[in-house]
Each structure stands twice: as C-alpha cells, then as structure tokens.
Image (cartoon, rainbow, N blue to C red):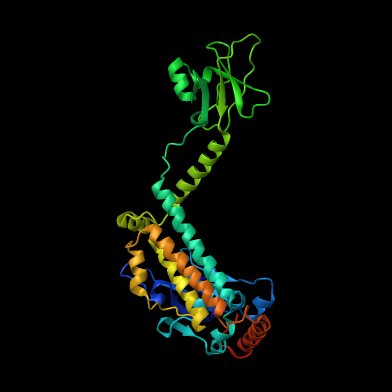
Length: 357
C-alpha cells in the first residue's frame, strides 16, 4: 500500500505538517514533513493483511494505522504524542472522532523515560559525529601489516619499518606459532624457500603460517595486535558507511559553524528535554516551541560542544525533578486506551466514510 492508495481510498483520518514547521523552528531551507493516521478497511484489518505504517521512500511522509498509533500513544512515544498534540495551524485534516482522544488521558510519568532516552540518543549521535569529524579515517585501508611489530635491538618497531631496514619483502617471510605466547610468531626469511608471507594479500584479515624447514634461522619475534586491527576495521567501516550515508547539507552546516558536532541533533536534545519538563510541570505537550531563538542558536552552532553537554545534564536533572513532583500517573491507563481504541474503530467501521475497499 502506498500514500497514493491511502488518499485514493479515503483511508486517511488525520494528516498534519510535522517536524520543524510544526515546532516553529523552520528556516527557508526546511523541508515540509507530513505525518498522519489512516485506518484499514474492516476486511483488511480482520484479515491477514494488517499494515502498521505507510511511508514514502524519503520517509518525510509517514502515516500510522490507527491501531499502531494508539499502541504507540500507550507507550508515550514522543513522536506520536507530538502528532496527537499538533497545533491547529499545522493540521491539514482531522476526523471528528479523533477529538475523543484527550492528551491528558494519555500522558504519564513514562514520558520522563521516553523523552529522556530519545534525547540521550540524540546526544549519542552528536558525540558520534564529533568523534568522526575530529578523528577522520583515511580512505586508504590499512592492512594487517600495519598492526604487526618486531623485537629489534632493545625494543620493538613496526614490521613495515623492520622490513625496510632489512630490505626484505613480506611475501618472502614465514611465520610459525610460538607456544604459550598469544599472537606472537617466530619470523623467518628466505628468498627461495617458498614461505607463504606474513599475509597472502592486502585484503587478508589475518597473518598466515608457513612450513619452516628444520634448522632454518629464526630472525625475530613478531607480535600481531589482533585487537587493535579488529577495532580499526570496525571504525573504518563505520566511518565510511557514515560518509556514504550522511546528510551532506547538515554536514556542511557542521563544518561551517566549526564546532564539530551535529547542531541539529543537539537542538533536538534541548527541544525534547524542555518538552519533557513542560509535561512534568504543566501536564501538556507544547509542540510549537516558545524557545525558538535559543534552539535555533544551537542549530547555528553558537555554543561550544562541551558547553551544550553541561547544559543538557542540567536540563535532564530538571526533567527528572519535574516528574518526581508531578501528579501524573506512573503509566498510561492501558485498559482505558484499549477500550477507546475499540470504540473508535467500531465507530469508524459503522459510520465513518468512505472507508470502503
């Protein structure tokens, strides 16, 4: 099922503008995100073709099936609570039946956890980007050879340096295990004994062993930093996956403000934390942000990264205190939400139009 199918079949019961334009944080370059709710026809809902969500390829248009929408509300999911509390100015269409879903019946202290975790995930993303920008990984991938070291004189030197000093080729080296010494090998060299080399090729992920004729002189001991190589491979893969998938506009913005963090992610950290504080104190979800100027200053990179982390910790503590003092219930009333879900779906199937296959 596609977005076009939902529209053509009259299945949409709620549609609104979401994201930055709903928050009041839009700028001239902001996209227009659309979210909403649809309801499956009775035949499909009771059959084997339940569809919980429909979105377009870019994921900037998303519709949730009514049952999934209510389920996520019962979990106090931040995105869905924002959807339920969309300002009238951002609502494109809302079926009258949905007015029975009162936000005050849904909110609970669970929001401290859901909004808090969401905010912390954004901090983690910002930290991850900070690490990637400050510590870029070279495109040319290092080989196992870069993580091998040889005892030399009174210490140890990289294998590649050792081979350079000796004028040797790694392909003419031979390795054997040294008993009781993990990742330590005896290193041998010969131009004509046909050793297997330290590695078989530049794409090798491990050293290789050779059959060494008895009496052959051992030239040195070699250590392979296996853990270091494994960590490097993981960081290399993550870094270049990120480069391939990153939002170039946001990355350029990050480079331009020169603070080495994803300022948009950090803006959402403070938006989520402040919204959570308001839920704890006021028992309502304020989607359109009164702190627009402060949030846009964060997005523009006007704060230092460490400064924002300290401010976020203080906001998180303020949020936790707000919920400690709040009179909100600990959890949503699931029985009430379940009954409401049933009654509204029944009304849609009996009276809602068109809702036909």
